[in-house]
Length: 508
Image 1 (cartoon, one colour):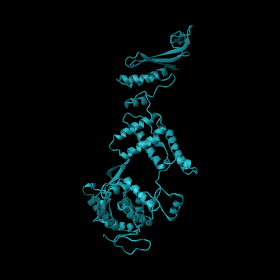
Image 2 (image 1 turned 45 degrees about the vertical axis):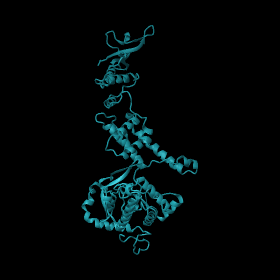
Image 3 (image 1 turned 180 degrees about the vertical axis):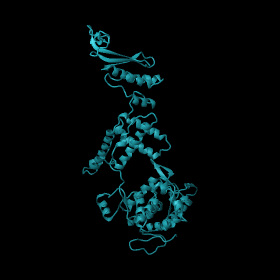
Image 4 (image 1 turned 30 degrees about the vertical axis):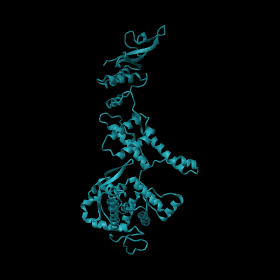
């Protein structure tokens, strides 16, 4: 690499108005030393060229001292040295140097070094949007990343991050930019809520179908951005940035809403105004019993699944994915080991959410009777279908033997709730109902955590070490199930206590 020369030049002109440059006699004293009171320091540096291109030089001449000119020249040489033995990269860096205006500083050497090491063009600034797309592509190539996680990443980038931050240079992204994005997201949600409450039907129609972004969603959006930027910092020796602004953002609390019970007053207010006290609602035992009665009469195929969730608090995917081998009707035990989840709309069999979700639970006699009746009914379906019956190995299937799609189960549940004229809850809220009834039956918090699969990692194998205590668990299950009053209770019944309906007493 050429050393480059450092010299003085000025703007003086001769009698023909031509610039004298570094030939002006005033630039030097009679002794030959540079005149400190005339001209500016400059340098020139031979630059690499593209194939077939003529010779070119970098000339910069706006420096007050020799040292500043020398330092700028050395900075340029350090940038060129990043190309090592790659002539194409050297020519790119030379293009970048020639594009810098006279008084502007040369690009930061470390920033260009990161780009060169990462295989990115030296002369192009990567935007946040470009980086997020390349980051998302890299995450798709990792088998350890769950499909639903990828869907969340893609949604956050497409709906929020790219529109608000995409045009900003990655190296220039600051906390203020991210704060402005979340402020805009919150403002949009507020505007949607205001429009929904408008007396003008046209304004209400303008936001129909639009979704607001809740605090919990904002935390997930930030988590996506923070992860992507952390990866930009961690790229081995190819660190694209040195600071993660997403790690320094304060957001409103994303605490989950507390469950509320559909009391008589709450139901009446809902009927009058359509308002729910909380996004998470729990039925009273009377309401839950009414639902099961209605489901038994109008959807016998799914009634046992809903009864099991209400009695034992399984997740939707856990119930839909329950296998024949996991249901031990003789010993009133259920083993939860897998679930059917949805990736987009596609159902996928996978392990339960966590090790603590891998659990064994006892059944009450009423639950066993319902499941045994379903098993007998399923046998009749299979005989009717004959050779067309698919062997899925699943306990809950449609009358034609095919698996239930989790979304179809939710749709059927919501339709039953509407038809029964009951206050609305989500299918997932049946888990909250189960926990509430278990608590009312005398179970402590540890019992409930274990039942729902929410215990800590230390409790992973708790059921394998307390098999002898399952009789106690059955008693608790019986008490919880007894809280649900039923209008119809099977072939035999006993006298019901006032206000509690009846209960099953034995297997048919």
